[in-house]
Image 1 (cartoon, one colour):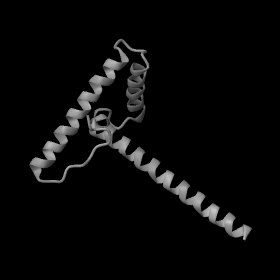
Image 2 (image 1 turned 180 degrees about the horizontal axis):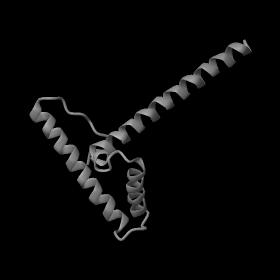
Image 3 (image 1 turned 90 degrees about the horizontal axis):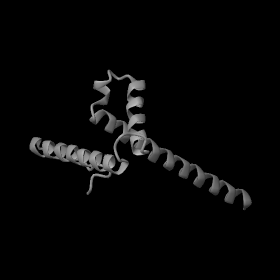
Image 4 (image 1 turned 180 degrees about the vertical axis):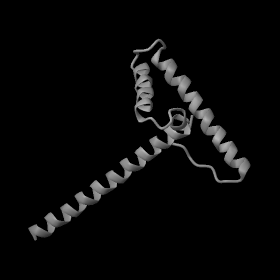
Length: 107
């Protein structure tokens, strides 16, 4: 009986681990898609160090290490992102393709 309980617990742990891994993988793929959507891949000739440097500077700005107020930066970048998502949805609608829901795109 004890072995069955332990085996069931092990299966549940494995399933939970696999589910968490799938969720993390999906999240990472979505983030990579945002990097591509922003055009960073083409603009940097797919130079990973340059892309990372760009993201590090953005993070430093949000930490208050830049010239602009972090909340102002966040609001400005959010507006720009929402406009880009809206433009993509409008382009998809004009082309007759179904739109895709974007994470965090709702106002």
